[in-house]
Each structure stands twice: as structure tokens, then as C-alpha cells.
Amino acid sequence: MMTRKKRRLYMLLLALAGLGTATALTLTAFEENVAFFFSPSDLTVKPPGDKLVRVGGLVAGGSVTKEGDGVTTRFTITDTAHTVDVTTNRPLPDLFREGQGVLVEGRLRPDGLFVASEVLARHDENYMPKEVADALKASGQFRPEVPGKPVYETAK
Amino acid sequence: MADFFHMGGYAIYVWSSYGLALLVLTGLLLASLSGLRRKERMLASLEQGLPRRRRRSGAASTGDDAGLTMHHGKAGKDKGADDANDGGDGADGGGDGGGGE
Amino acid sequence: MHRFANPARFLRLAALVLPWVSVLSALLFAAGLYLALFVSPEDYQQGDTVRIMYVHVPAAWMAMFTYSSMAVAAACALVWRHPLAEIYSKAAAPLGAGFTLLCLVTGSLWGEPMWGTWWVWDARLTSVLILFFLYLGYMALVDAFDDPQRGHRAGSILLLVGAINVPIIKFSVDWWNTLHQPASVLRMGGPAIHGDMLWPLLILALAFKTYFVATVILRMRAELAERKIQTLRLTQAGGV
Image 1 (cartoon, one colour):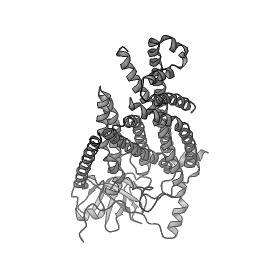
Image 2 (cartoon, one colour; image 1 turned 90 degrees about the vertical axis):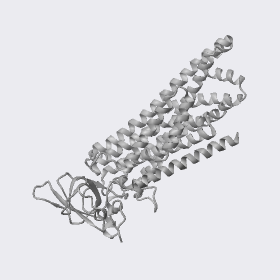
Image 3 (cartoon, chains in turn blue, brown, orange; image 1 turned 135 degrees about the vertical axis):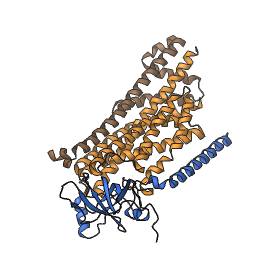
Image 4 (cartoon, helix red, strand yellow; image 1 turned 90 degrees about the horizontal axis):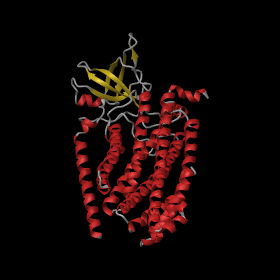
């Protein structure tokens, strides 16, 4: 009786270990596809060509400008190592501001300007009342977090 | 107060979230409660049927608590008589507790 | 009939626990909602939409907790044939599905104003959607067999296979670039949420948990009653 239960337990553990390994291998192999966006550094390592891609980073301070037509916005996305200049005529989410994490979807033009067909805001894991954030900013301890991480190894 | 309902302009998003939570949680609770009631009623009526056919006089005297009668009748045949008995009592007591909510 | 011993003890314990856990849940909901809606401050970035978190995050935690507990129960059912394990999983599944749906929809309602989209196919959102389908699949599978025992066996196997999705949900935000931000509470270095927002969140999380305990007890009792009904019908049909 005892041995039958033990055998069932071992079979179950073995099956689960196999399943886990298979899943881990599959997900590692397709990491590039699982990544929802790339960093500006990734674009320099592996240029996307004419493909539709998403790029994520922080909106660089002082980089946001509205064009004369009132629709087009230009800004720069940075991951602190590399930057991408972006232009879009899409509406911007409420969270969009300088120093904010954003994701843009679109195509990189040969001249290096990224034409975004969609702009999404991404917020980091920090939640606090306004007064606390202001105090942190005043003391210089406020650091916006760069969204995500480079998918491709950067050559060093 | 108007500020409170306004939610800084995000009223639709905030209040629909809370409304949906209320809907899902109470919905599941009520469905679970009514399911339990229905099955306990069905069980009681089934148990009422059995002992009457078997021993007409005994069941008639405790007709209004047929569920318990059945447990006793069943337990009499079982090896774990005490446990089955307590189980029956426990279920009935719990039913009252749930109704008090 | 030794199988009745454990359910009987469960019913006794459940009858003892149910009133307390119900009252506790009601109190926690009252306190948590009061703190969440009236006392807690607006977020410096997200303003009042941060209040969606107090529903969204407990629902997400419960969605994962419920599934994990069902997977553990499935292992107990397959290895030790514990009679209550299958009853627990069957009773918990609709609740888990409800939590997951709540998590998905409130997430959508939060994403639209803040991110600028109702939905994206990033690793976190997609894996939670898969969790929802696992719940639905389990419920359909258990009912799909004429022989309830075989239905439960198949359901338990599905639960265990699907358990691989739980760590994927949890760590998706760390392993891959996602639109969804990384964890704020259960993370290295302690919570990244200010105390005034953390307390209502934790209280409402406990409220959800106690709600689940109370409701799953009701559902398990219903399932036990259903089994007794089946047994009685069989004996009656057998012409006892």
C-alpha cells in the first residue's frame, strides 16, 4: 500500500520536473518573442530594419516638443546608455510626461527617427503620496526607473 | 462629497472596478449559498423517502427532522458510527450559521 | 465507509470556523474599503486611479493562491487519494475563475487611463489570461465525464500541468520586458508602496482571503451533500 503511494508520488514529481524543464527551455529559446519591447540599446545592437517594433525607455528631460500642427509630438527615449528620437501624431496617455517610462510602437526610419503609431505609458513599482514624492525630489533621492532591460547582450 | 464621487476625473474607471468587485463577490456568494440550500433540501427529501419505506413507524415520529433521522439510521450500519453521526449534526449546525449572515 | 470519516471531521470543523470567518471577512471589508476609498492618499503619478489597486491586487493574489491550493489538492488527490482534495478543487474553481476575471477586468479599467490601452499581449497579461482559461478548462473537464471519478482524475492532471503557469505569472515581470510593472509588495528589498497605501491593500487582501474561506466552505458542503444524494439515489435505484 505504502509503496504504491510512493510510486505515484515519484511519478508525479518526475512528470512535473520534466514539464518544468521543457517549459523553461521553450521560454528561454523564445525569449526574444516573449519580450514585449526592446530598449534603445537593443536597436543599436540589432537594428530592426523595416519591422514593426516596440521600444521602451524614459522620456528624456526637456525633450518633449509639440509641432506647429498641434498633433505631432516629438520626444527622446533613453535607457541612460542610448537614446532614440521619436515622432508621433497619436494621442498621449495621461501618465506621459518627462522622466516617465513609455513604450512606443512603430518603425525606425533609416535616418534614425522612430515613427510611433502608438504611445503607451509604463509606470514603475513605486506608489506614494504626492508630498512624499515631492520630498524625495527635493532631497535629490528621486530616481525614475528605466523600464525593462536590454534583450540583447551589448558588446563591451 | 462631489469630489469623492468624481475621483479626480477617473470616476468611471474607479467606480466600475469597485462595482464589478461587488457584483462578482456577492454573485459567487449568493450562488454558493443557494446551491447549498438546494442540495440540502434535495438530500433531506431523499432521506425522508428511504427510512419511511423501511420502518414506517420510526420515521413518522421524527418526521420534521428527517435529515438527522437518516444519519442515525445510516450510522447504525456503519463502522465509523460516531463520526457519521457528528457529521450530520455539524452540517445542520453550520447551515444555521450560514443563514445568519 | 472509512471515506466518510474525514468529510465528517471537515464538516464539524467547518461549522465551527464558518461564523467566525464570515464575521471577520465582513469587518475586514468594511475597514479596508473605508481606508481605500476615504483615507488613503492619491498617488503622486496616478492620482485616484491608484484606488483600483485595492481591488485589482487582492483579486490577482487570490487568483494565484486559489490555483496553487487547487494544484496542491490535485497532487494529494492523485497520490494519496484524499477524499476531500477533489471536493476542494471543484468547490474552489469557480471562485478562482471569479477572482481572475475580476483581476483582468479591473486591470483593463486601470490600464486604459494610465497606460493608454485596455489590453496588450505582454507576458504578464497573457499568462493571467491563460490562468483564467485553465480555471474554465478545469471546470469543463471535470463535468465532461459520465464517471465523476474519471472527471476528477483528468481535472487533477490538468491542474498539475497548469501549475507551471503560476511561477510564470509571478516572475513574468522580472524575466521579460512587459508593459506591466514589476511587483510592488512581494519583492526583494521590501514593499515599494507607501504605508498609507499598503495598509488598505493588506487589509482588503485579508478580506478577500476570509471571503474565500467562507465561500469555499459553503461550496464544499454543497458538494458533499451532492455526493450523498448520488449515493442515496444509487441505493434507492438498487431497490434497497
